[in-house]
Image (cartoon, rainbow, N blue to C red; front, side, top):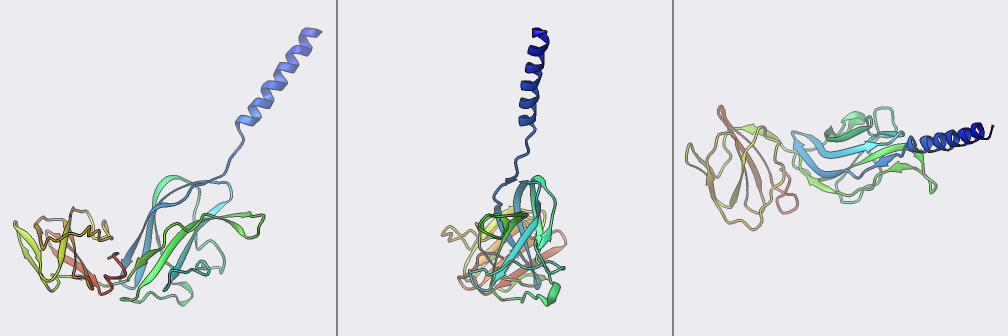
Length: 232
């Protein structure tokens, strides 16, 4: 009889430990490597994320013409999150700022944008659970055009030169939006090596240019707020 009681005691302890091992812990990891992608009267935001939380509902998008945000953009139903999404392991995500409710993004206008992860659990201090705003990114929507912008000289199999400012090569890229930030690092070069698939960004301190050379021609974009925004 004593042996039977002892076995039941051991089974009880084992069962208790097993219950602890399957406890679910919600994880709201901060979003990182956030960057804005300007388009023609449009804006996208790209980032890395990994959210393992039972109440995770999606992402909130923020936009303003100043560096201060009031509220996130509402979704099509008039609530939050801005963009519904499901839980996910480490992923690279691109979201498009919505145009519902008459929202417009004017070419040539400087905006500031950000993104957060949003859940449905209530917080003790009020509101719902949401990751903090870590990145406030300037972005200027602009047209994307075919051809060569003013001031550039493309010499196939030789060089890509820019007159009136500096230019930096970002190597061969698979698409126009692969690089969106001009990192000048006090560069002084006015000419870079030519490459098919090569992506170049140039600046004259007031105007920012991005040029992508493909086998079928060139594509470029530009905006005139280089002193405030290094995203192109």
